[in-house]
Length: 285
Image (cartoon, rainbow, N blue to C red; front, side, top):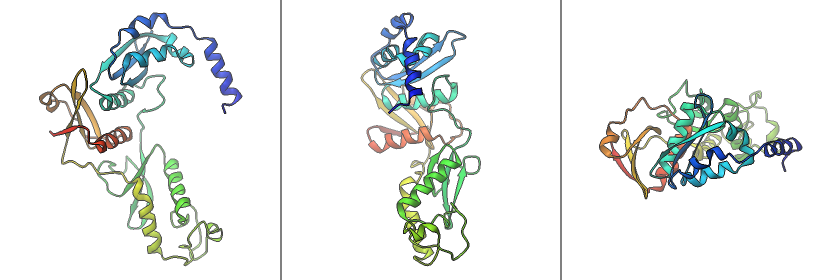
């Protein structure tokens, strides 16, 4: 249930809502096809909000009818769009544009100065970040997190679900040979006090982390993902789970400027899910 404060804020936003007639014509002129749209502000045309949809016209009209977005709509002067062949390209472009342009009203998909992961190396688990290791190529990394705290909380959940020992995972300090409090509650299998061997604990930890493992880039180099839509065809250039851009032909895709791949958790999740479906032809570049 929403709190009283949340309800009050929503009520205040709704009270100030007036349908943005100045945007109606622009919204109705948008194509009913996939793409990315941007609401631009009155002052300098700066981006206020960037979104994506499989139907640009319908999605933007929905924005215009949303009372909770009254403040953003009042500040908006125009709506621009970039058509895409399908949802995969729209997702990749949206994530890239939000990180590059940092629109005022987007809360998700923003660029993070550092990204964190759990690393299991020689039996020791630690929290590492993207300034220390290359998340694109370093093996035995698990999970992608926005902070070290979020990574440790994830490790704590893994320990709780699998009766792993907090002290052996570095989540709490404990004198050697002394049973931890959780082992007395049977929430730890007892690797800290001889209830199981360290090797058994290590094996169970590795098995538990496997579902969180960051997949290595499965190709020898960059590839173009061919996506066909009703209105157009595109080739999305990706490398090391990084999106470089899209082109209308394979020849143009080969000319897309490619910088060094930088691990991006949003592009990783989009591409990992998309490539697992096997719906698109892939062209090595």
